[in-house]
Length: 357
Ligand SMILES: *[C@@H]1O[C@H](CO)[C@@H](O)[C@H](O)[C@H]1NC(C)=O
Ligand SMILES: *[C@@H]1O[C@H](CO)[C@@H](O)[C@H](O)[C@H]1NC(C)=O
Ligand SMILES: *[C@@H]1O[C@H](CO)[C@@H](O)[C@H](O)[C@H]1NC(C)=O
Image (cartoon, rainbow, N blue to C red; front, side, top):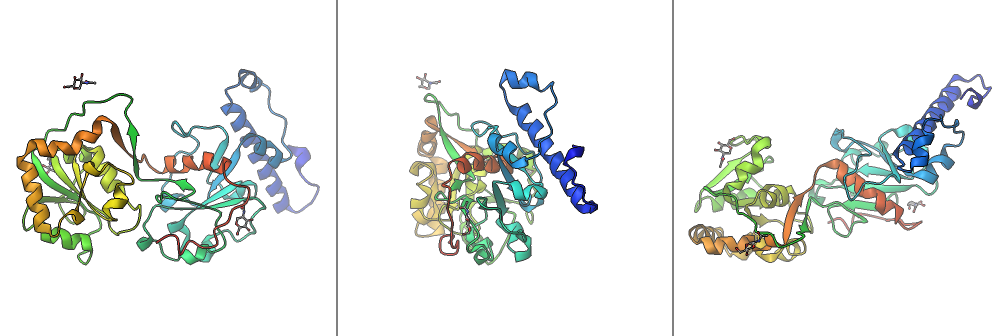
């Protein structure tokens, strides 16, 4: 390593090179370690030669993907992607000192959208992709115009994103399954953390609860331990999967995890029925728009409550598909690896403003 140190007396430059050398060494060891090749495994006994050119080393082996911030400051384990996203071709890091040698930088919108200073202030290395990542709806994504002429690829719940990171999805069962409907002793549940009395969903709830019993959980309501949440919700026949805002493809864990994975029938308020049907079978959910009024919806729910056979029709699709809720931040980021390998060499998104609505 010593040979790498320049003769310069400037201590900052020396430290810079030392750090670069150390990073190169760590990256090299890391990718060597990850290879399953037995020859390579054996060679781990032999210390790798000091790497003088960080670029040539990791470019052959992996794409370096930099998380510019931890999303909302939440930390998680990098480089342990679950199948089918496991790959030793990408190296994820949150270490900004690797900025210059990163092939892609992922910007989580809400962490960088409040000031331009939160984006890199040094020039972008040639060929580096800037990836815009956001799971919040347009109503909660301020300052989209900050991203004008900066972004190369999008990563969001929108199905037309370059990297599609939905809150949930269906998987096909290998064989026809007899899904067992969880035992039901309760009628309608709603878990809500952001209680905004002016919102459309609260207005609708206030109307609906005049006609049918609704158990409401959340910050300003009955507490619901998150540990047993799904078990708890599974005892309800219906779940109010009401989104905080209505936008194309904005279908969150309220539908996927709280309702479908828990084994209840979702009553959705959000984008149009047509939009939901892009993702889930039409007989898997009830849309508030299916009824001219909250009272008529309540009447229908009470009817289903009495007619078991009719209620069970809402579970028919489960013989073929099973719902999955996303398993946290790591998996979303893991999806970026393959997408970046397949990304066109040049791509730019002049503005997000007209698209992200
Ligand atoms: C599912 O139920 C049907 C009818 O009750 C039965 O014939 C079939 O063998 C069951 N399949 C499985 C995978 O249990
Ligand atoms: C769900 O949990 C709450 C509080 O943790 C409890 O009061 C309620 O009885 C539970 N409901 C069911 C159906 O288990
Ligand atoms: C990404 O977009 C920027 C801004 O338009 C552009 O300067 C840069 O060349 C693009 N990079 C790639 C890899 O497409």
